Amino acid sequence: MSGKWLNVLAVVVWATILTACMDYGPIERESISSSGRGLFIVCEGNFMYGNASLSYYDIDSMKVQNTVFARVNGKRLGDVAQSMAVRDGRGYIVVNNSGVIYVIDPETFEWIGEIKGLLSPRYIHFLDDRKAYVTDLYSPYISVIDPLEMRITKRIPVGFADKTQPSTEQMVQWDKYVFTNCWSYDDKILIIDTERDTLDGYIEVGMQPTSIVIDCNEKIWVVTDGGYENSPMGQEPGALYRIDPATRRIEQTFPFAFGESGSELCTNGRRDTIFFIQKHVWSMNVNATEFPQQPFLENDTKNYWYGLAVDPKTSEVYLADAIDYTQSGVIYRYSPKGVLLDRFEVGIIPGAFCFTEGDGH
Image (cartoon, rainbow, N blue to C red; front, side, top):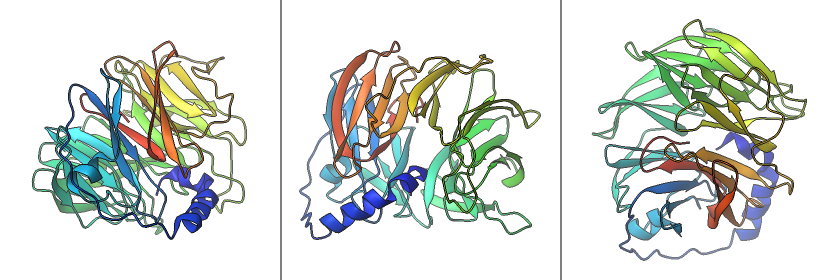
């Protein structure tokens, strides 16, 4: 379940009650395929309702195809689709609450296989063709998988001597180390030695780091949401952090006001600019020493902005609006200058993006 779910749990429960008697019926299989360069949109669906879906957007023709996994394979994606990655002609769809990673052909959307034995998988990071890490919300381990054989080969314990069990989320790599943020009721960035597959330490940041990226200067950026009112962990202002992975120290902190949280941190293709959501959408040069004065996109209509990605080739910005978390979400496509280029509907609660070429969140 996504970290953003805490803010919408009441809405989701109400939606589940209203729709509990719906009958989806059988799914007729179709033969469809992608053409040209595209973008996958991972739509979470409602927690515990099994209505996650996958959309595909052709960047050149500006045409979208929805529920492509279900239409091609004749079965639904599962419960809470969390993220997706494409590597070596395979697409890996991480379905959090179903505990599975589906492997598909990114051109035909056809099912190739699946990786099972996962508790609550979140994100996948590839170290090479035969080794990848999978983070987990509830498991005390990071799973090591063989992507080609689609199986778990070992597990890396990430618990501490005081018996705390951090969740693990997004991952970035510097040298032989993978850094992963611990979002759920935690304040750590864990460091994994990829040669030994062991926990090699951690860096403390603010409460609940939601996302992590690495820039062109090989500096790591983290944004936090600061917790929430009446949280057992407490609440503090969210913040943006820049970390030197070599020294493992925080170099600079950009604090938000109390009650303001940050999420969806990502970079452009050159990795010289970061983008994130903090009520509005902000962009910031990685060499900046002060927080920007004006947002990249202003949220003046109180939209439920839920996902964000920057095209690594064109630096165009894609923004996901979850609307009311019960109806089809909307994706907005903007130029690097913030000019609206397109708008299209996808599935329920679009939360993650994956470009068929390059790297995106």
